[in-house]
Amino acid sequence: MIKFLQNYVSINIFIILTILSVLISLTTNKYSNITNTQQFHQKTGDILQITLPLSIGTYGLITKNKILLKSFAKYFIISQAITHSLKAIVRRPRPYNKNRKDSFPSGHTSSAFTAPVFLHSKYGLAAAIPFYALSTYTGYSRVVSNKHYITDIIGGIIVAFISLYIEAIIKFIIKKIKIYKSKQ
Picture 1 (tube, rainbow, N blue to C red):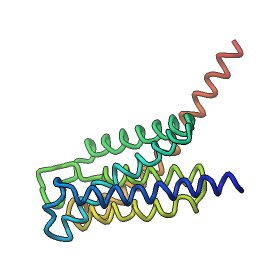
Picture 2: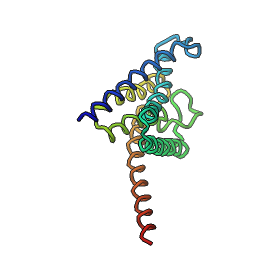
Picture 3: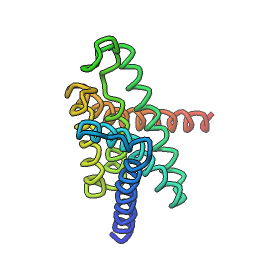
Picture 4: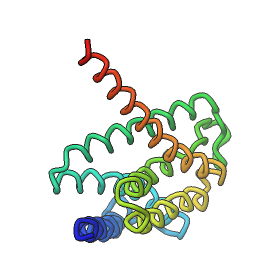
């Protein structure tokens, strides 16, 4: 129980740092030309898709948890590989530009959702709830800024969940191969 509370407190510190990094980023010169709420949502989603997964990596580095870092890195790479493969296969036009055929699934959403899905699998739902909220906002920001359809967002969320299972299957297969080789 104490270990869970330590993890929960540490994770919530990263949530606060993530939100602060969003607010600081929105005040920098790059984002200072935001003139409407649509642009605000878009830029905030842009930042969250990076800071949410990065916070898991930072947590792993600070706690010196190499297993967590390695596992999350594999999971994130699988998630992005699936996302970008599906974009190339499906070739769905964007709502704002029919000539850009990379709408499905939402890369911002699949990237953002890797953080809560991973946390949920390692530390339980309570630790992941704030990350789910921020990731959901990231998906919302993509629809509000007219970058994606709602089905693109749902696709990005599904990719994040499926990728975790694929990472677990790969881990299981590698473990079985190592056991098999050690018996020879």
